[in-house]
Image: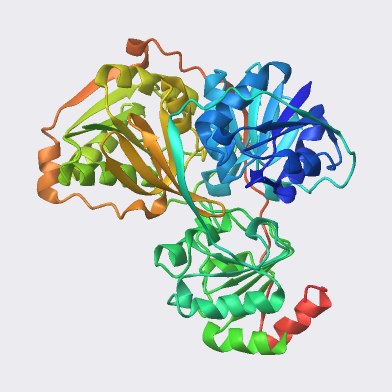
Length: 308
Length: 252
């Protein structure tokens, strides 16, 4: 058995954390080959070659692959698929865009957001916002899988594995990239941060969200938000933690003014330690928090910032 | 321009899900069912395109059990012009996989020839996030997933997508598949007169066999289990105690 794993490459750079976590999950299934695709992907390929458990790296460079558009990226993966029993990727928005397309082109069912690898054909995945865990066995000849990175530890340093370049089928010309609006931030990336501070509807306004950011900066944390806070316009969508946003599992998760709807819990309940600050003593978040503080956040958070 | 919107009947967003004791799945008997929330957003966007004069017909399609006609009536009450129900399962517990759904939708699209398909980015039951992408692959069309803004301009659509790092804008050639995210719009409630009118709108009923699609699952469900539960911890009296606890655990 052999695994082709799509590395997470953004603007020519390898996102090491999600890629190394996916490699760790995949390597029990067989030899892992990482594909780094982009307009320039050679540097990403060199970085991927140093992940423990990677047997080989394939570098695919073509302007059509520069923004990971689904159509050319899926065509690229399908052109390599013949040699592999498993095609896998960390479940980022890029991979969620591309991998179901790959699966359909191969006439197999995609297995999304896998949280546990049981054996070569059996996988665990959360359904119903994590309210149930389903174990599925694939009858398909090839398994196309995305891996929930918060469920796996990152593989360490190893290698270097050998790096080869591969031909690119080219651009089917179906879609074109217009622009990216990437929020620049010095804070750690949300899905790999050791500490996350999230704000909910209780924060009350976009202006008051600065308080959440201040606490996050004090803790060296990433900033998250509940869907309610995003819907209300207090925080941008890429901060959203939950069923339809990002899934995180940091050492410490601080939920401020978040009631704890099941859709939010789906994105953070695997955190090691959960702290909740909420003025409503009946908020469901307290049922899963390790430490709960029933208090007005506008008093408690400034005090917390001062005393930490 | 014709817009096709696939809609799925799922357990209502607010219902607490219960895993069946025998581990065979989630209990859906006598549970409130509704239109998948992302699909509601897709229906809303299609209707807005019609109201803006960009689209002239909105067709809603649902694949599943016979009861999905209620979901289609909701789409019609919101403002869709007509509906197609494809009965593919007899038991409400049988979920039709995205690959089979995509194959049936492809057959419907071959007949209907829409210029745009607006679909929800994922269904809140199986959380697969796959049908739109798979359909796009089978048709060889362009795709734009996780849309927070859709502008149709001539022969293409400019779509802003919610991605991990922020937002990405792509221009896709029509016909295209666009899957929609939460912030695209706020779906309307159907008014009582529109609910009454919807009862008279055309709703065709077909079966998966009519399209020659095999819906047998590729993924065998081995078991369905409750997730590990977290125990509630302790309520601390004040900020000082909280800080002390976090220091004790070496977290700050």
